[in-house]
Amino acid sequence: MLIDTHAHLYVKEFSNDRLEMVERAKAAGVSKIFLPNIDVDTIPQMKELVDLDRILYPMIGLHPCSVKSEFENDLKILKSELDTSTYYGIGETGIDLYWDKTTLDIQIAALKVQCDWALEYNLPIILHTRNATSVVIDLLEKLPARPSKGIFHCFGGTIDEINRINELGDYCFGIGGVITFKNGGLFEMIPHIPMEKLVLETDSPYLAPAPYRGKRNESSYLKLIVDKLAESLQLSVEGVTELTTSNANRIFTN
Image (cartoon, rainbow, N blue to C red):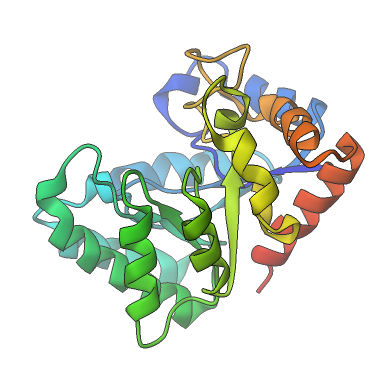
């Protein structure tokens, strides 16, 4: 059975067929879908969705693109949620230097707080690192104590960054639709990543794999990512399924 470690299935893009989409994922062999939170406003819709199906697992965090001047108040609300409800990871959090570099200082401050939560609750931290992989690695390397496990979501870094991440602890690499993109570069990087650190993700509704690139993504497309990952690793589809499922279960087990 497949595990989607990162999918925003509660967003408006699925308003017209949300339950049908979840059923399609189950029919495609997806047994667990982990839902990263975005901000304070997305909590109610995420929790409402989780209540509808047992394969859905919520996480809590503040997306770096949602870190604004009032971020400390947002973090207080999220922490209250963490204290009173069950969550399976911290995220998605991290740093994004693609959309707005001016908020870097407060993005770093928010990430440090969420790293503390991951430590306190022994939960994996789910890291968004767009145009900022080395910045996030630098931060984690310098923390007096850092989360022992996590996922670099939508990984697209270099061999040097892979090696540095491997030194951080039990941090996995989220492999999604980009592996199917012609000239995307991820396919060629896969053999440099330890197999015990590969996990699957879709980032639905974003980053749909070929042949759906540019359209809405969904968790049922995970099989397309598995097929390409198997090709890159020169393993069977069954082998990749077993490998990535085992890796994901390890990361999300307290």
